[in-house]
Image (cartoon, rainbow, N blue to C red; front, side):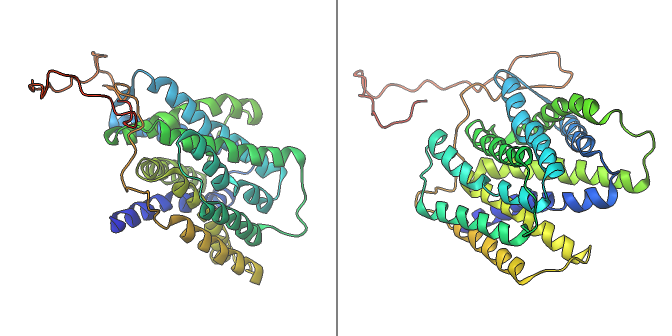
Length: 338
């Protein structure tokens, strides 16, 4: 139903809206020059917290799937994001990152069989233009490594979104699989942070602790749980367009909290971004409003943390149903394989 779809979209949109506050929290509350440490504290403790809440460990293919998805959605994306942030003005990095909906549309067409519509392409292009008007400055300097990092971050996040849709876990495991990905991504980031930035600071202020706590609980545990729930319930392209909210929220917070000025071009860019979001979220005739059953049979298994048994949950016994005919029915070539 339309009302259910709007509700799912609204909850999913909270995730990129929360991510739009990361810049403000980082600059105002965290110690300077430690972005990779912030990424580790944001992801690894949040994943461990979700693991403690769900008390479920991955099993079977979900061990390597969690590593791949966590490496793409968390580890590689955050590392490339911070490289771009250090070498590029924020407006340039955000504009390059805005190509993600366009990339997801192409990847989803190839890997998920989603229709690549003209409306999606126009909305994605308009979203890039809107973000550029919103955050790009005429005096912005360009750096080749920074541009490659920004584009690479958009690519790995786009691949992560599409694979998260292709490998989505069952509903009871969504929170657990979110924790697995955060743990995997944070674990991959930890040695990089220690190598690049050295050991963590020995003293932290109350503001530092407040900022790290916000990034961990709100910026990771809550937001990524909502994000992956949205990927499970909605088409991948619909979800990825919501990332355009991040630069919009970041600009709004800069205006409200930091007293930054808004130009006429920025207001036009904000309207273009909102228009692209609304156009992309209009229900399509082929949308059934149901999550796709993309997980392989028998792979969404778990074991309790600390449990002695590694066996999957027993499946209910099937009832014997008499065959309707002794002659086997012909196979429908259009019926999906089970």
